[in-house]
Length: 527
Image 1 (spheres, one colour):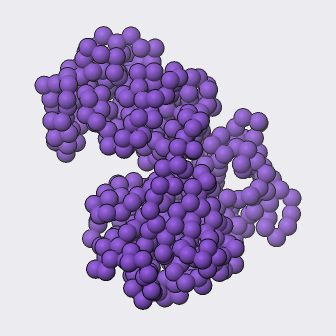
Image 2 (image 1 turned 135 degrees about the vertical axis):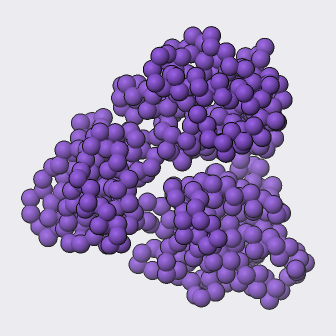
Image 3 (image 1 turned 60 degrees about the vertical axis):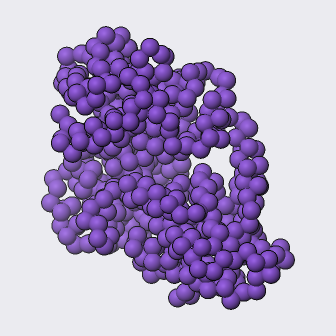
């Protein structure tokens, strides 16, 4: 069932079990039920503290509960947690057994203080790189608080349930039977939605932070590299980010990073965060910057205001706030987001098995998405605004060789059409004028590039017509002591390697700025 590498990894992890656990299964005779039985039998052979018990009576079949023996501490998986969810299985076993999760004490206290009955259900796909964070966060909550329960549901095993609930994006989370949220969510994000006092508590904790020498805004490759370089110089460094890893978390395969033949974005993001946290860096996640107030305005230090009302100050700032998916800005797009309109073919593609979908965009991302989807869905229509696709020729050749793909060139999307609950079609017209026609389909995958996350500095920093922060060859902006790096800036190519390099450049320039500036308070520690 499991390959030798996975078995070895599992055996190693399960040596850390604190208490005996039972895998209580509710099985059926379906192929997936047989698969689950084989999986659980195999897992049980890896540790003498694990027992597979086939006495479950859960409504969903096949499913299983991980239970700490003799207690009511448990988490539930409906469907086999393989693929991207295999780490979720290993961590759930550890945490149910009593091994403490790697979260800070304040967050543990916050979870344990929740005094409401919360039953979460998460619908996932095994190819989704965003799902494990949500599954693992909710599993942790259910282990730490007896009033919280969680069931992770593999959509491919429970297709009828997915269809009944009109789920067209993963992860999708229900709380007490009502839709709670969709898409990537961190543990802090979830807590902020169920704990009314979360924002106030978080802002109060951040207000206690001492000023930094370098404050990095953004946790992607550029921000991580900047933090590493300044921390290694021995100066006080902080990094704030909505989600550590940035666009890496939405990237399936990485095969062009020097020295790494192949990896996946979430794994690289985790490695980056571990590397940064190996140094004395104050890492603050699940926060967003809302405004930059330069030192020339404050008469002291640069100030970064956050959306939760907190403020952080620093002698210098490296802005590496990255970019986000560009939207079409047509009627119906926002209304049907996560109800047929999506941006992640790897995550949501399996939900459209056998159906008709469109991919908007003929660049590398769009064509790669169309090729991937063609192996899952019934039919793919690629819609490109220009009269030719801009993707690499090898990708175009592969795309045109697929029998279930059509390519429409010179077409502008005018509307995403739906029935009030889900997408039913896409309206498009000749880009140089003419009547729109509607292509009937079930999903729309938008792949038309990125927008820099720079609106929050628009009144302070010079930007180009695309919204990118203008920087010189050393990463400097038009404001002394403020530097830029990565996809939010005018660097020529938006790649992981170039982002990392620009982060290092900005960090070294920030350090040079600090040692050349007067330091009246003696805060700067030279390397």
